[in-house]
Length: 166
Length: 218
Image 1 (cartoon, rainbow over the protein chains, first blue to last red):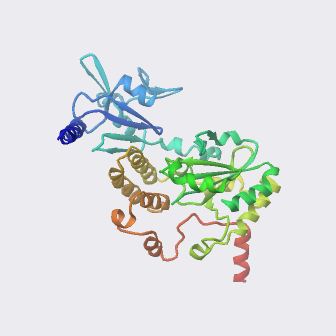
Image 2: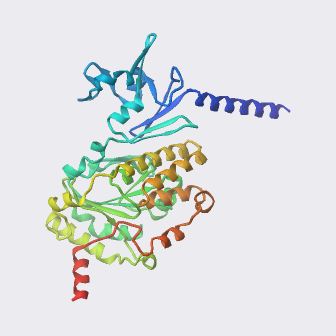
Image 3: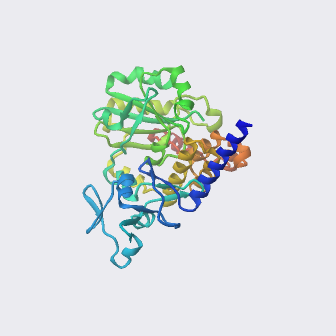
């Protein structure tokens, strides 16, 4: 009996979480391969509105007068449609991350049921090696979890070869 | 792996390294047993997000890339069989590839198999935007799979397959995580048959192989 009610409570909780996700609950953003949990948005929207704090936490981008900036580079927002990117509600400023992704041509995808957003690299990031011919850098773990980067092997000839268990 | 180990033992004293990358969403769980059994001396890394697939725009395994001492690509993606275990299926002989590697390790960029910067620029193409989106869909599916939502991953894997039908990585990896027949209504064999002999990997075009086929024509 106890088990049944515990089960019912768990089911109830799952139901509640699912319905919360549909009406603008907690979201997950995957940016450059890193997943970050974000707070719920102020209202349901098919776009991804995030607080400025969450924007920086998930993407390292900062909104500045000259544009949306990270490291040395800034992407200016189109003046005539700034309201599509930045919105102030009470004391909180919201930023439309999905609209920004469109602006900078990031491949973007979304899982509605789980409220997970995925942002891929911009074309100029993906295609940078076509100009430099430099082999794209990566850092991956070995079977013991120790990380190795391609650049650790500079100075040697490297045969990169893929395989899989499948 | 024993084939690569043999080549590595032969060439490792000549400033040569092999980086072997497991393109396995299941990570150590799926790729680990083969590594533990073979215990290769060269570097074996585990890519549970198919990052290398995306970065280098690869469509299947095994794919080989040659990188010189300066970190520049001198031969881009091509099928990289180390032995003839599956020759019956694809008809590609491994030996010329291994000979080409030996030549490159000896002669460096002067090897006839190392491609010049100009030719490389002509060969490499920007990633097709649909393929970039496919990579995003596949990565989202992988995240859902890794966080225990494997059923929810399937529509994203299917979308990746639709957007980049040339990628056998996206097909074979997704099928391996559930049931090709039940969830995708197909099998590897059926899909290969549909190609009617068209290669399901990035073909290899070694200079000496081109010559050989020309000789036959003459």
